[in-house]
Image 1 (tube, rainbow, N blue to C red):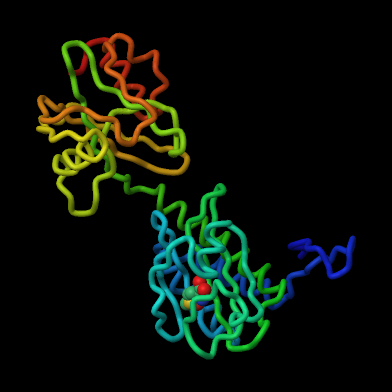
Image 2 (cartoon, rainbow, N blue to C red; image 1 turned 90 degrees about the horizontal axis):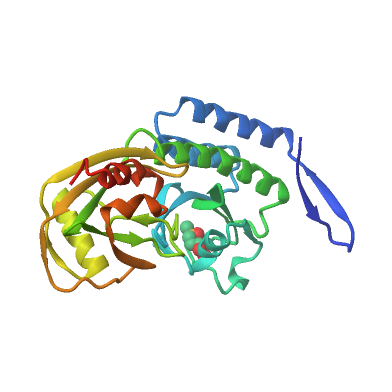
Length: 305
Ligand code: SME
């Protein structure tokens, strides 16, 4: 099976790398494991074990998952490592995750980026797990043999990363929505709306202030925290006024909207591109996040709040 084209050692020369039969067999096994796995987590556990079993010179095999700007170590086989959390700008792991490209290091001791895991390690390969251009995590493998990783390993692991990405993506956007609390602040017939920062996902679209509810956090408490962080106010969170679920291509959310009858302090924009007090009737003129559009239309018609 033709898998990748890479520049050869001579100018103008291209080498076609062919996945060996042995490699194809490993890919098949991992595809089978993916079909049968009950969760992304159990698939990752099986994957690291299978890779080490099939390739004994893969002395340490682990999977890191990206959370915000930090790589968090998930399932691994081999000796425990001190590097269970790696910031995006550190190590060979950080280099692969921040560029979204595979990194192969033939001699780790000659690479200034290298974060040592064990004294025996001589070479390393790190393969990002990406979906729709977004880095979800990476497969990291150390070998005690110098220059242990070839283009065949790259082909194998990039394929494995693809299988894991699919499964992680399904889990991320799957049946359990991400819980979000949002606030409706009113002043007469005007309501406070916020434009997402241009550098954020869905940048420049409008929304209501609020954000993701952290694990074990109470919904109203979470909204109070978000309103303090985003707008510098100490808010009183009132009743729930509306609740919706929406599936974006990259996330599934449940948004709970609360009235905010009063607050202390002066509203100050700390994170948005812009904020505006706008008359309810004008709400449909703004490009709102897809999830909010039904709510906004109903608010404009005076049906809610
Ligand atoms: N060597 C990695 C750190 C992780 S350990 O290999 C498990 C790096 O330089 O980023």
